[in-house]
Image 1 (cartoon, rainbow over the protein chains, first blue to last red):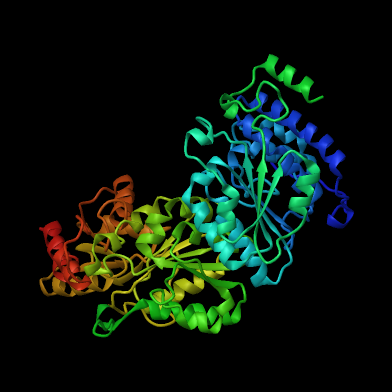
Image 2 (image 1 turned 60 degrees about the vertical axis):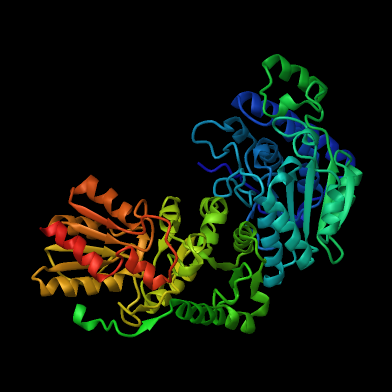
Length: 285
Length: 315
């Protein structure tokens, strides 16, 4: 069964008006509410990271990227890879709002035989560029597709979002080194710097200090922002690099938008109770 | 058919690999090569000279190499990812599983100098597990061309066929066991020698040695059938079942561990369809010091070793 949305013939990148900061904020509220109800129905998910990454995803899909939901394989589409694939519920909610998949499909998240697996699958979900899940895979793939744009003479950008704990995986640094070497100005990597990983704070696990300096040393242009400020997000994500790949150090709050979840380790993959969902939805009204 | 196979002249299959790849690249701008500081050992110098912008050398970083290959496929290109097989498969196993196979990208993973080709460099540089590892991954076609003509055919097939492929590209010199232009069909075993007493099922470097073993056995009045398995996944199930039914037993021979590779694949079929006696020949421990030719003999992976196993089966 296809979960792709049906589209009128006039849809396409030329007909999509990017949202401004206020409109993005309103859209993100809807996405966060959908994430909560999606995870509630599934009984499984990674709500904390979903909430911290939502504003980044909403900005990319509604304010920056050249996409056509009716033609998800358009050759010169911008590429987006969610390297922190466990935050699939947020990606699915954004894809549904943007018109890649039916919103009704969200209710099937993680259910038997659903196209919406706990981690995204490009062969089943329109708008997904790469199957991710094990950490440290997204950045190398994004580097490859950014190089491929140059070889093919196509004008597209490649975006990848990693978690901050994810940067403990060595494969990221192999890719970061090579992207800097290749001066891939059409590549933008965003780290969702929420300072928490599954078991503890990143600082108490394997310190990631001076991430910006690290990427700078690898030949990247570093843009440090508040990852929940749409004006800053639009500015940092909207411009490609100047002769360098761009590293957006997006300082975020895990569980953002729901007071009792914010900056708390246990909400990495805890599933909210029905009463907690009611409370959370009130805060996101 | 054995008398038509001239085993005297031997070939390094990397030459046929590189020539086929360059030829394809001239015809199709989507063909790109990816390597890990292995331009020379992957025999890509000619490709680099002719298509400098289509050779992506990531340096010594195999996980990134396979991920970058997947990204190039995402861009609509057809990457041939070339690296010494132990590092391509062992170091980047998760990238092979997820980035190539689970994504279903059209990309070709080329395991160069597999088996014990790097003899004296020791077990760190031997790729004897690759067939077992690669065969365990869904949706990944696993090819083991046995000679330069099959190598050429495998490269062309992989370029023309959507989906992920792993292929061994041999460095250890082997005789031709097929003819130019004969090609091969994925999922088909080639019967090189006919016989109904015993079946010798071999892959890669061991195919010509199985043909030699059949000659030895013929002199002793034992008619051996030789099957060349150049397509390990998918494997020619029907040919294996026929061998089990029509002979007194099966010897498998591969330059790899005797668990999970060719021997494992044949045993899985036989035990579920027509149980038959088997001998599985392979590299059964970390190798001692020695060159590739010495090591193949050391492990009995030669005509006499295969013939000995066959005699035990028909006794």
